[in-house]
Structure formats: C-alpha cells, structure tokens
Image 1 (cartoon, rainbow, N blue to C red):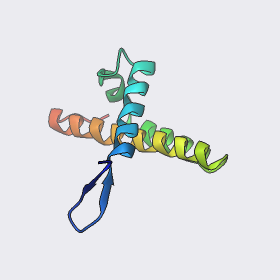
Image 2 (cartoon, rainbow, N blue to C red):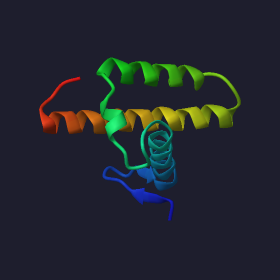
Image 3 (tube, rainbow, N blue to C red):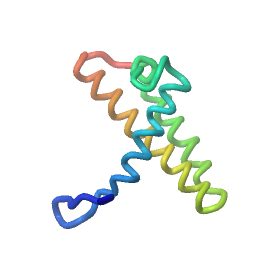
Image 4 (tube, one colour):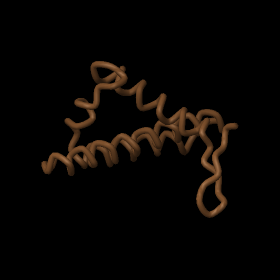
Length: 96
C-alpha cells in the first residue's frame, strides 16, 4: 500500500516520501562522499539552505507538469536536508 493513514484522516504518500529520500541520497552522493554522508550538508550556513531552496523552487515554476513535479521533489529533499542539518546542529549546540 502506497499510503499510510495519518492522524486526522489525511494520507502520507509513501511513494513521494521515498522519492524525497532518494533525492536526498542522490544529492549526498553527488556533493558529498556517499548517500550516507551528512558532513557536506552540515557545512552549509542557514542562508545557503534558503538560497538553495529558493533557486530550486524558482525552477519548479516553469516546465511541463512532470518537470515541475521533479523540481518540487528536489525542493522537498532540500527542505528535509536543511531540517536534518539544523537538528544535528542543535544537538551539537553550534551555529552555522
């Protein structure tokens, strides 16, 4: 089953969640040392994350529906990576 019941009656689309996770792994492979390398993500300042997300979101405004969807998956992957990086920073009590 692709969807899982959420609290409040909504659905979590697991296919989309898996695509976002795959996009994150692709980015870590491309820019880091592998799909489980979080060090590269943690090198970015908070302003970097906002710019990365804004740039990719701008790309999502144009193109075919499939192209827009692909860019939105990238936006979502960047957002999740930014939150994960922030969480690691808060646990380590350091700011970038």
